[in-house]
Image (cartoon, rainbow, N blue to C red; front, top):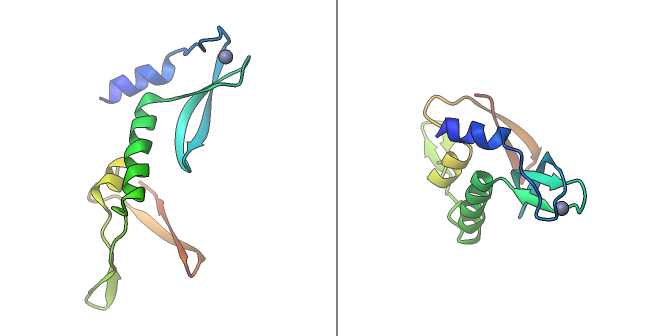
Length: 113
Ligand SMILES: [Zn+2]
C-alpha cells in the first residue's frame, strides 16, 4: 500500500491538453488533497487516493456521521473519533495530538505523530 502511494507521488502526470503539470496542495469541498496542476491550461488533476478519501469524508460530513456526543469519563470529558476520520488522518492508538483553540466554538486538534 505505502509503496503504491510512493509510486504515485513520483509519477509524472500529464494533462489531457498535453501540458506539463506541477504537484500542488489544494482543497476539494474544503478537504485538503494533493493534486497536479497543468501549467498550460490550469486544470487540476486530483491525486486518486486523496480524492477517494476526500469523497468518503465529504459524504460522512453530509450524513452527519462525524457528529459525536461529548461524554464524561472521571473528571474529564471525552469524545470519540469516528473511524472514517481516523482512517483519513491515519490515526491509531498511541497517536499523540495537541489541543488548541480558535474560538469557543472551534477547538483544534493537531496531530503530532
Ligand atoms: Zn492542461
